[in-house]
Length: 153
Image 1 (tube, helix red, strand yellow):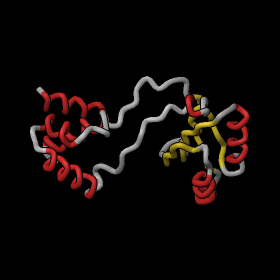
Image 2 (cartoon, rainbow, N blue to C red):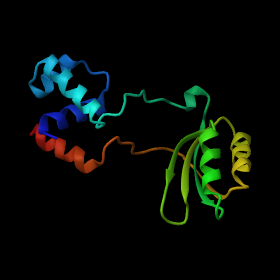
Image 3 (cartoon, helix red, strand yellow):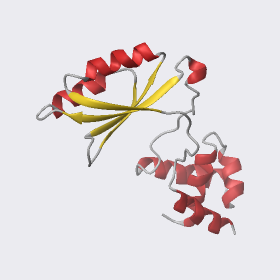
Image 4 (spheres, rainbow, N blue to C red):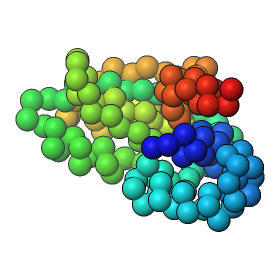
């Protein structure tokens, strides 16, 4: 990946709705050249999609939590199937360490969280951590962002 593609990716992480013309100004290329580079980044799987950033609280989902799941012996396949059907699950990571999975969930109420935990209890022991705030949320690791700042300078 060359420096121009890196600059394009960083610009898109700031604003994925930026026009090809505006992106071209940042990297000193024509809009068609930028469009071709972005098409290739999409085709190779570097860029996997464009999504809005949502405020769940304003959408009626004021509670977000992380649930550490210690899946019961030989229940992992069943657990994965169940989790894939749960509308409250925003993200699921399969991990090393004490938890086989961490689920990020969004719910409208504490009773809804309790109902969700009850659906998981037959397949895993759960440890729930309420998300109070998200002081840092990045699409890319900071060291890559620092590298991009060097490209600007």
